[in-house]
Length: 325
Ligand code: GDP
Image 1: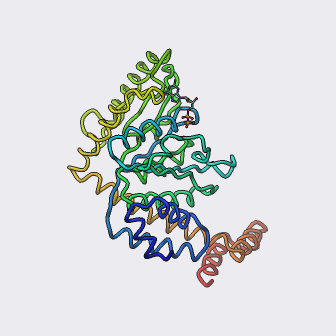
Image 2: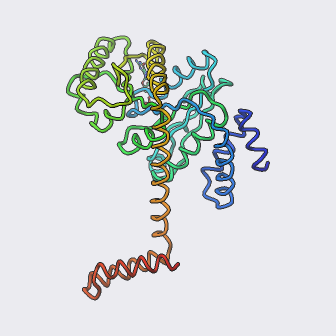
Image 3: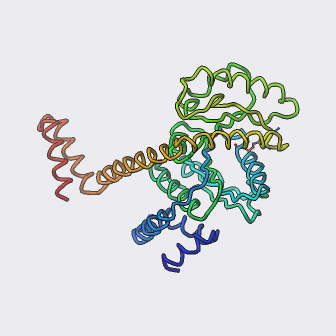
């Protein structure tokens, strides 16, 4: 299949073509890369937009259970839902977060759903670019909602927030002390904090946890892109499918408010700028990885350590050698 055919099939919402295109953007081969680039540029002209929801939470909090229940609710509403994952640790642990076949079994059988495991790559920068491009492909394929999941390991939340219209943090019911466990930076990027497992014995704890976080969120600096009452905290049971409709309503209210005031467009513009800058940095850093550059770096660094060369002068030589290559 050539790029033109692939493009057409993606625009028609063909899931196999979409999967194939994502494989292209994940590939390290130069010919795949250039095909992916051409495809992305052409698809971008169609300016299709999904609601992109970033979702994070520590392992065991119930991300896959939540995504499955939430996704099933959305498909029942007639919406098309894509699920992607950003997992910087996948290469280390040997498995990807959506790789387990038993995860989201019901949702994976839905014809209006598309589930894609995370690419296994150690380098967060590489994972980020591929994921962002995968999101763009899902948008072009006409998905109404794109859910981007990540495990909470600090840096990856920021990466996911930079490719989302709204960011959801999933937490488990816990005592007040554990509120400290969520880093301030993560609280600041959350639009919605969802306390999961609000069922059975944990129901009242979940209600307390929700109230604690609602209080903590009120103390944060007010952001211009938030309507009154946001960021908000909700409590759900992904297992019993309770509270999911309220969470969806809260997300829709937030997004409609932002869209009406141009915040979504402005955020997307700022995100595009961010990704451009990241890509420039990655390309420059990649130049340091060539065998020649590595040799030069070791040689000049040794010379500096021995006192034979001045650090700044050696650095200047290194950079001019890089440029000459
Ligand atoms: P993930 O690692 O964040 O993807 O978490 P999973 O979705 O795999 O869930 C981890 C465990 O929590 C599983 O045993 C789930 O059955 C359980 N779990 C998930 N959601 C709920 C919930 O709403 N209520 C209860 N009681 N358990 C849940």
